[in-house]
Length: 120
Image (tube, rainbow, N blue to C red; front, top):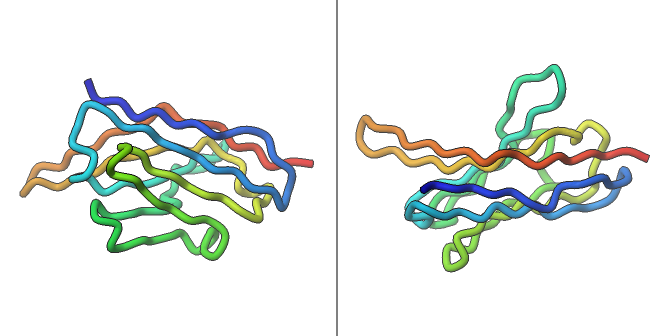
């Protein structure tokens, strides 16, 4: 059974930091690219950060560059999102996503999300 379980969300003041974790099970984690998405109320889900299976390529949304860092530990089947200098506009539900292309087949798994609220 595939599972992606996010943790680490919560309420933080502007300028603060949070570290999100996503623990994966039920699939070969090391073969999947991993992504963090977020969705704010009334907005579409957006890609925040992405890391390839071997951690050889990282990508970030322009809105979080220089503030967020994605990393992974394939030995622990876990991906992280370190979020610094948080702003109120970072408030959203953050989702972990596992992604792998097998020829024409696309494998795609999602976590349940964790709420991040940035407010004073």
